[in-house]
Image 1 (cartoon, helix red, strand yellow):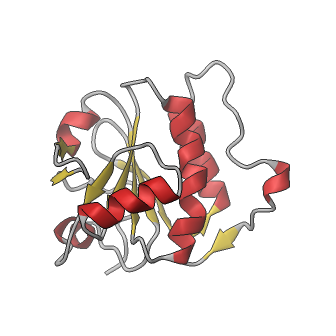
Image 2 (tube, rainbow, N blue to C red; image 1 turned 90 degrees about the vertical axis):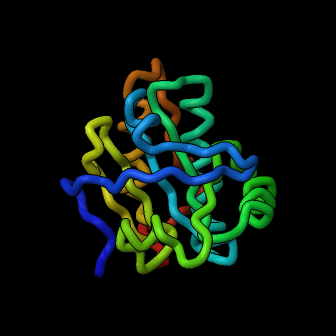
Length: 164
């Protein structure tokens, strides 16, 4: 089974974040789009990608009409340590073994991103690190920002793709 594709209805879920707070996707979508970023703390491509996702978070910080959530296939302590190590300030949820939410979303690799519209439809499905798809997700989430900042700087020397 492949990761769910764009145009598919995203499965609803509730997962705890690293602080123990339950996060409901259905409730979040009532406020606006949600970008889900599934990962494992041991994944080198996730370690590479997440600081760039934090740049998106910095542009949407303080807004409640768009959200970015990390979804770790690890326990809360490891996910929290990952967030600190890679400078991520967005909520980190935990989807521990046997990975019920990851399985519902058809994950075979991480990182995998899903940009969800408020109606629950998947607008973007991205497996691995795909620069253009991260830029597309960022553009969507920062659309109403006065002057969105590019996620990738010329000095970043970022490849177009890294497989997960």
